[in-house]
Length: 235
Image (tube, rainbow, N blue to C red; front, side):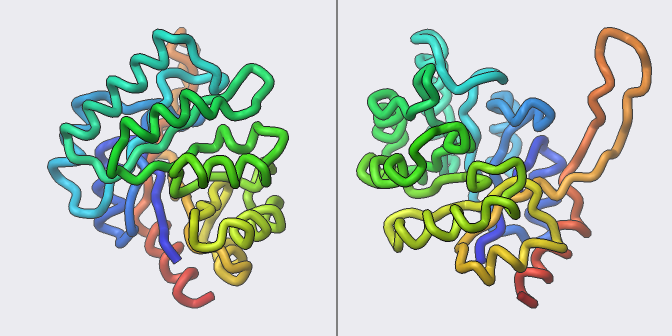
């Protein structure tokens, strides 16, 4: 089973590789669900890591319905990622009714070219997951990151299992959302091929009452990742 670590910083990315993760999804600001990391972080991580780096292309927090200007930003970020030599793109676009915007998603897939393309957890918002699965396969999407349309992937495991069975070898369901060393074995036993976890610990809390807010600083933790790997191997 493949383990992808959702790395929210350069240090998280380095920790993921040191701990033995198979690949990372690089992003920033996990507290809002993740957004596209800065150019500097992208460049530094791709220069240092030897495991595959997939990059989240989400220009802002909030919903997954984007303006034409935001769409152009996403396409420009794909071009930058290709220049930097990343292995994959994680993205996707929805309509206002939360159905998938296949036309613009297809444009992102085509622009990504030979890069691995994963549809992100916007998939968990859509009303028709089984139909969408088949359509995304037709577009050339190779992975779907999903919690099985539940707050935690453990609660959505039946849908995750069904989606992977429907996809067969045409697409990988990447289970993500609340996955930890205590429950990761359930996903392997259910026949899932890949899991996604941040394996985060809090390194610093901001308890001040300033306008910067109280969002804690987190990092992907080497011992937690190693525990995940051990649990996968023992399942």
